[in-house]
Amino acid sequence: MSKAIVFSSGKGGVGKSTLTLSVGRALADMGHRVALMDTDIGLNNLDVLMGVERSIIYDVTDVIENRCRLSQALIADKLSPSLFLLPSAHSYEQCHADGQNFKEIVSRLKATHDYVFIDCPAGIEFGFHRAVAAADEAIVVTSAHLSALKDASKVAALIRSYKIPVQLVLNRVRGDMLLSGETLTVEEIGETMNVQILGVVPEDDAINMVSSGASQIRRGDGRSAIKLLAQNICSSSSELYDATKKYRGLFGGIKRKLRGRV
Image 1 (cartoon, helix red, strand yellow):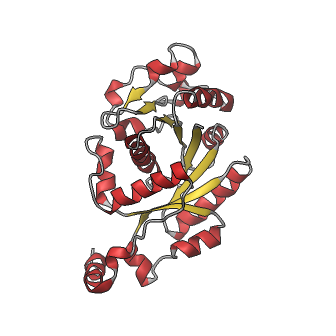
Image 2: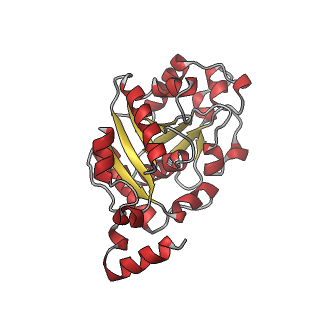
């Protein structure tokens, strides 16, 4: 059965869109058909992250106003042929969509795709509610910083009011800081926020390089964490990546010291 999952965050800058794309590609590489729907009107950037911004002819507004078919607006990813993007409008003036419009489009995407990832605008304004209303499930993306966690907690509470399941992904996690006690542990965050943690993704430059639209995550900690998160999504498992593993032991201690000087 197809799923529509909204990726949300309390604030910008936590890597939500990059994570949405990376997990979408991981699921596509596992054989699933995945559609990414960018709902951040005016501030959208999934097309840039995928490197397809010059390929856009139609966007979500054209679909809503019947200027094109849904299939005509979808753009195939250059790296994962079973991953597609429905671009957003580049200005508020071009888009007069409401929640019902988005629900109808998501329903149509679910008919031809295994997963529909809705990239939600950061914050809790109208765009947030419009995106969440179209989803079956929600993933809140946050870093381990206290300010980000506070905002993520508020977002999770709002999502619950829509009566849809919500889970948390901790992004850009520093394993060295977890071991030194400079940030809350994964368990403490889950208990404090009372939200199930679906995935832990470490700080990894290889993930950020995907933003160029020119390369996959070929190796490293980020690739392993993204694959594990994708598996949790499609199989309802709950295995979390251990971001502290490489910072343990003798060599791990050296890595912690070197990282602390950065």
